Length: 230
Image 1 (spheres, rainbow, N blue to C red):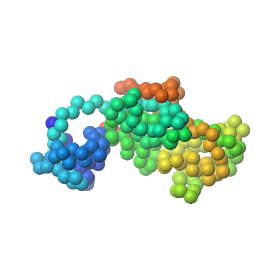
Image 2: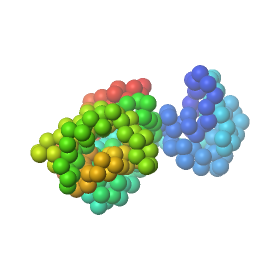
Image 3: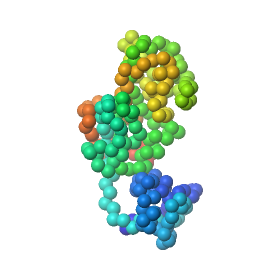
Image 4: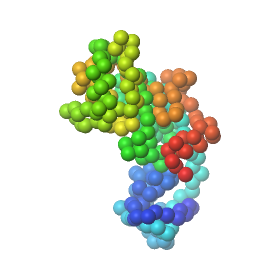
């Protein structure tokens, strides 16, 4: 049995509220609602129901859930998803199959919106190798923002071109689907490899492919502080 007191300024769907509190994913909350395992103010809650300030949510399940936060080095060719190394955890965001590098895994669902919502401007850094030579024009356009056939992308945070134009280091804060691939494709650059090397203050360095690093207590505190999660 778990009781949660609602403290929100505006009414909010119960599955969204519990997801943001890191209790369960929205999908799992909906499952519990269907199973009649959640009450609001001592009355059975229903799918889509909203809760408001001072409501009391009662969840009729035993829970000793330990929050887990880990960094994982995804190799090229692997599909982003659940992994045996981190049971019960999900990736926060994705890397496409041909990309590699850093992913954050957790069972704390508060992290999802805090990290992925573009309005929060969380930095992600990538190292890209291209077949053609990137010119200074590429840097200029990326820093101004670019519109492709698929979407319109905000200016990138930072661009560095080196190794005679074959390597590009890009920092973005938006994170739309296939953002870097689509931007560079629109600039007639063919990506040979794409690797995410940093998420906010957490870096890939020192984590071997297909291995995970569980964040220490200090690192967990740093992550939640950076994400402004209390």
